[in-house]
Structures are given as structure tokens and as C-alpha cells.
Length: 108
Length: 124
Image (cartoon, rainbow over all chains, first blue to last red; front, side, top):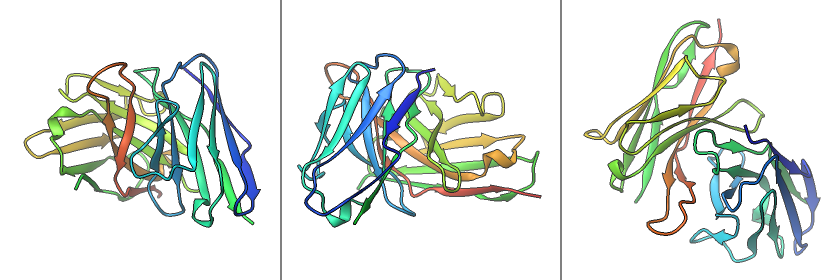
């Protein structure tokens, strides 16, 4: 199985900050990497698919990058509504999709 | 609009069974694979199972393989998760989600949208 490691596990930042989350996979997943945002008590919401493609309706301050085993999710200018937990997911392995353990983002 | 609504959650004793349903609307259900993802209290997301759009193939996480069965009824736009031999560790919110694959090019996959989730509590 492909293992996913997200870092940091939690992060505290201020409005206007540039924030970057990292997701590392145990083997190459090429571009088969998605990012989701989850707010407390809510279902996850798709932000980025195929490593770098912005889902329709998602603010342009969100961007994704990376390839092979190392991926990033960046928020260029943090807003108060961006608090929540962010998860990466690999879909390269058709038989077994995996999520990272999540990064919890707090707004100072 | 595209919508998924889960139902069937509740409190169940260890070793018993429960069936969850996910009703879809707003899209051609038979064109899409469907997933279940669960989230234990205070924990992260765990992928559980997938059924292809034609219903011929299913995949399961090791933690549920042999105990859970995923099926679909395209006439009802509904996918079902039959859960047998439930353990305490199966206590979680269960989400269904639609798998999206682009119509052309590389077959990247992603989950969108997700339902609101249904809570399963395994407790004596």
C-alpha cells in the first residue's frame, strides 16, 4: 500500500500569511494527488485535483504543486475562513485509495 | 444540483450488522464510480470501499475486507454498504462520495461531491 505523510500535523498562522502544507508518498503517485479541506462537523470539500488543478469555485489563493512523491498545497494569503483540516489523497493505486493523516490549520 | 444523501446509521451492538444507503441526485448515476470514506471520532479520513460505475468491480480497505459489501441499484440511484461483524473500531461517520474521472486524457480521479455523512456507533 502507498503510505501518505503530511506535515506539519498542525499549523497556526495569521490572516494574510502565506502557508504551505506538504504531502509525501511512499512511492511515486505521479500526478494522482488530490487535496481536500474539512471544517468541523462538515464533509470534506475538494480543493485541488491532479496535483495542481484548481476545483471550480475554489478561491485562486489556493494552489497545488509537486510530482512523483512530494506535493504541496499553498494558500497565498490566508483568510479567516481557511481554518480547518487539510487532507491529501492518492488515487494512483486503483485498488486502494489512501488519505494522509491531515494538517490542522488554525488562524491566530 | 448534484447531491448525495447518506442514511442508515445508528447504534449497533458488536458483532451485529448494519446497511448504509447513499441516494444520489442531479447527475447520471450509472456513469460514476462511488466510494465510501469513514472518519472515526477525532481522527482523520480512512478510505473504505469503491464500486465501479458498472457495478462489476469492488475494492475494499484491508480493515473491512470480508466484512463489508458494496453494491448499487442504478434504478434507484443508490449505493449500499452492507456492514457485517461490526467492531468498536468501525465506529465512525461514514461518507459516500462520487468519483470523478475526466472525459479525456489521463484518468486522474477525485472525489466530488461528498454526502453529509451518517454516524455509525458500535457499542454494547
